Every structure is written in structure tokens, then in C-alpha cells.
Image: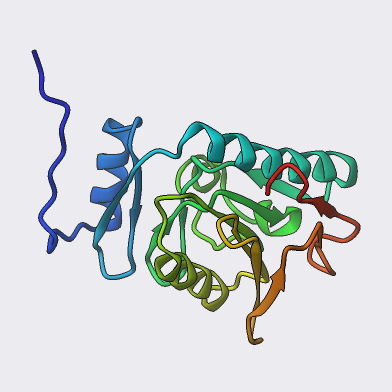
Length: 191
């Protein structure tokens, strides 16, 4: 019987190319890579968090299907950010004109860009500070709008490029502002 356990030393660093190879042969693992090359193995979400994440992704997909303004991605999609990190937000969106500038090969792999819009949904096992660091990283790499949805505390941290973080207490909806014009995310089933 094979042992499917993976143990990674804390100081283990990988290049983007090595990361792509590791991800390709470990499709069942949720992996990310920091800008300094540290490999991050994340546990899968619980069913409840997955259900709520799908609600957010579904609303984003439905809005985009109607507007056709961009491309929506789920939590299994990896992006190579300009700083070199390989990240996978819980939900994301890229403006159509930015997406179309990529070659078919770039679109097929880890797209070499930061999404215009990202969502991170905090699960029970997530610590807030690493999620906040990721959100700041997205904004520093050309992200325009990000929502860190903290179900535990019923708060949403709104991230915008070159602006202070805005914290909303128990909002029932979220607006996509000028980044996602016309979308109003209903948080009823997310809380």
C-alpha cells in the first residue's frame, strides 16, 4: 500500500517551474507558492465552507454570464502574480480585455497576472493574518478589488488598490463598485 502523505520541510523552496510540476502530479492537493518560493500546502475546506464558497462563486458567475465583461475562476485556479508568487483565490475575475492579451499557452497554465477581483472566504481553520497578507499581495500586484469574507466574525474586509482597508460589520450585500459594475452579492447564505 502506498503512503500518500506529503511532508515538506519549512525551509523548502521551489521555483515557479518546479511548482507547476508538483501541482501537476498532485492535483488532489491545494497548493500555493509565495514570492520567495515557499511551498504552501493547504487543507481542503470543509463541506460547509465549500458550499458557501460555491454560493459566492455562483453569484459572480451568474453576473458575468449576463454582462460578459470578463472571465470567472474557481478556487482551483492558479495565477502567477507579477511578484512571482503562485496564488489561488477562492473566487476571482479578470477583465476580458486583459484575459484576451494572454496567449493560449498562458491561458492554459497558471495565467501570468493578478486577477482584477479576488475573494477569500475564511474557513474555521484559517487564521486571519495570512489571509490579510494574501489580500495585500493581490492589491500590490494589480488587483483592483478584493473581499475577505470572515464568516466567524461576520465581517468583510474590502481591499482596494492604494487605499486603506474598509471593514464592514455583518453586511447583507456587497457591491462590486466600478470593478464589477452592477453586481450585488447577497451574503444571506454565506453567513
